[in-house]
Length: 262
Image (tube, rainbow, N blue to C red; front, side, top):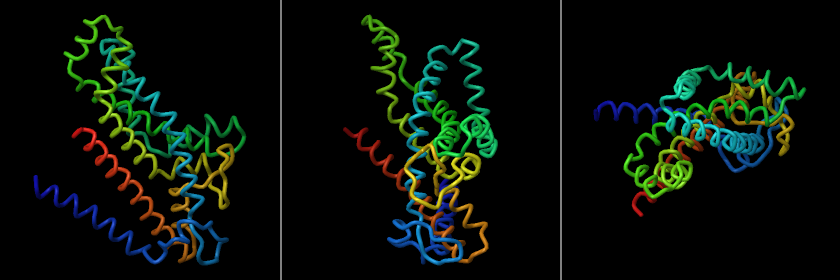
């Protein structure tokens, strides 16, 4: 067990170290706050991609959390229903669907009807990725809530829907938050859906109805480009993305640990 843990930590540190080694020379204040420069010029930054990723993920989270948690409540509270079992099975299947397929689906569902690429369509694609993860995590969290708490609430004459809101959700909130963070971390690293939805933008854009830059898409563009400067920027952006996911996960765990000690 200790050996497996050590190997896992070693691999993680190797990945972080190699990515940092490749892109460390570009990680500075300008890189984080400046716009990308035209092709062939050295310098510039990824500020628009950082802001774009944040906007797309926030909107996707607002879409995915109510749907995922709501579906998990249905699956957990009505386990004998055929529809409930089907929803659980569908969520398990969707977690294994390639992200490029999700991107194509979002393209057909949102981009083509609207007639243009947009950050909103990117949020829809990310939401499709996040929903099954949140659903499965929430379902497992609800199952861990002691039956005695539910029965005590119902015995007091509290309706079932209020029992869910006032008892089940608060008790399982820590696990729910963990599931949301996992879903965000999974979505943040996906570039394929953004190719078919957000499309990218080298300028500042705060309008989700227009094409918008995201960090995974920028990494893909730079990594496949012909310029050595772009390759270094791709490594630097990869390190920034890794650190965002890592710091978010650590802060969430610290927050949850603090809440559990209160």
